Length: 417
Image 1 (tube, rainbow, N blue to C red):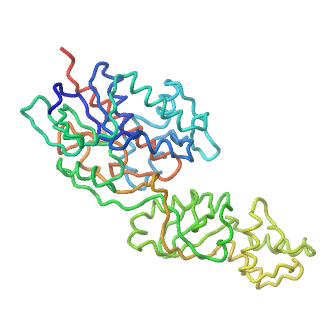
Image 2: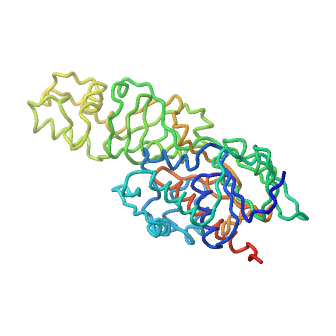
Image 3: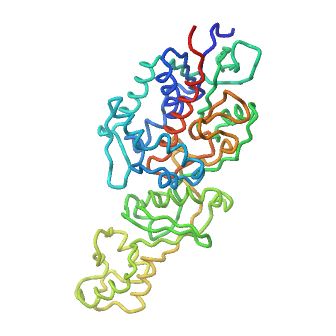
């Protein structure tokens, strides 16, 4: 049976983008009938688990152009939207809704509670206060348009309902999920195929096999044969390498790495020190009686990793700096700055899974996020062909596109009689 009264806005998807669009619409147009449909049993799933359960809300990058540079897909198209709603606007909005954010040394921003529940409570409470209705365990099964009916869109849910709505928002997340892609295609949109982004590298190598949990604060990783590299912290895992440096590289190289079937070689500079050979020779001159493998001659380098790289360079455990050969110095320098590792696959957290691909941005008015193909249809979040590197940038895309879409819809809703 059809719903008796058309909704002003039905949003498919109860994630960050869907919620922010619904809240923005309802707050700007009090009394609007706004409904969120979420297929799973709970809303804001990615918000809950992001940032290790702390929720990396955004990044302390407040200028539109520099902010847009953190998006491998969508960077040019986001400059305008970030001018209208950027990171500072996000910070101000949450503060005005009772949530204070803090900035960490790398620019990532979290709630001061270090608890993603703070963000979830803020969004769900704000939605309720604005009059937004949320239905969980209810997905949009099919959507059609009807210009002559009481509302433009007819939404058939997987619960057997028929809903009518004047405006429709698709915020279904990455298009790896067939449902969101199918709905967009049924409304005339062509999608760019999706491939994984933000993933760890699977590596089987004696130099790191015994070191899960060891991290390096600032390294450089390069893809051999491809002009692509990234700087940042590295984390050795049970399966290989992860951390911001690896995740950034996976985002920028997402499509190329997919073409390579995730089998390629990387070069790692563990120390980012141009004078590493000089530092090693200085240690040989000044620390002659000290055993080479005992610790690195520069600050904050993990002892366990140092020992493994020394072993890879052919340096025996009992060797002192006075005994080390020039050949060993050169081999150790190479291990530290040009160590090659073979990648044989990828690993990812299925719940935090990010893809590149989605709705073609040329088919969307980026000022309002309205479809250029189907009037009244709007998009927000990862369903668009936009993805950012790690560090709060994907959430900022959700807040920005959600805000602009919800605000644009609110301006078009007819005043109540």
